Image (cartoon, rainbow, N blue to C red; front, top):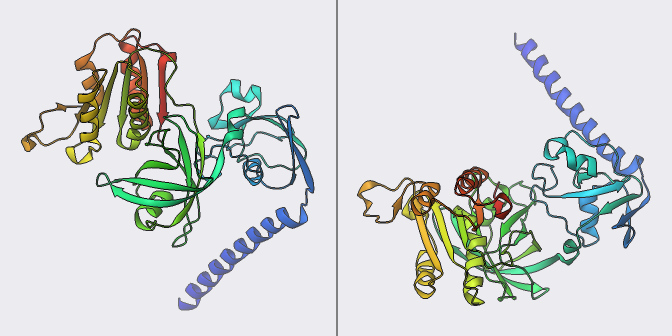
Length: 370
């Protein structure tokens, strides 16, 4: 019996080792044997051309040339942020990409740039705004505890020393390797105001076993240098005078915080109701700051809604879901714009409620935190 067990273990170990050897050989084949040589990336009908060494993903090769396409999953094809149009030379659509693309996008040549391997000359289309994105070296000025699972990070920009962004946009933070976890990039909305060009602040919520958030909470130190890129995104204040409904939850506070403080700073007096959803009082932050904003500006009203606050706590504010708080205050929002930020479930529920109250679909702006 012992001899048979030993044989099974030996065979299993042998198969595992053979699998590792084959995997290594495949990587070497891609890098060494399949030498694609120099390839040309033509951007926006030849307005910009790059020469790169073929074989790597379009996303990574563009980054090597300081063109940063949004990506939040480390190039695994799971966030779908890195979409761009490939006009020629992109090869066949991969099974990884298909679930993230609509029929119209596929017809238009939209691809996930992290899944497109550059093996020949290729032509692509990139929004002009992405050429303004830069990589920043920054220093951690502070890690401030906001709630039991949300930190405020403040960074001083070192190189370049300033950033131009719109309230509501985001940056990508690159983690360091730690305890066998690889370096990844993750997207976080900027919570500070655009006028403060030498610094940026982020709100980071702990994701259980999340690679980047675990690094932020457990390993990032005040005073250390980090790498950021940005700004990204088109979630920002519209150029109208329409009254506003803002709805957020958790770290979805960040872009709304930036927007309403920018409005106060620039004396933009648009009627604004801000509904913030949380479970308990321990999940609220920036409360005093927002109450002061409410006292100082007649156009601004802040309404926190707690869905699981103990009855004995003495909380005198709204109890229930953020959508229920909206329904208690309004039954018709004709002419309003809406700004939503939070989890996909929260954003979807809010969007559904807003449409019931006559907010037009194209006037609902959102930033989903997956």
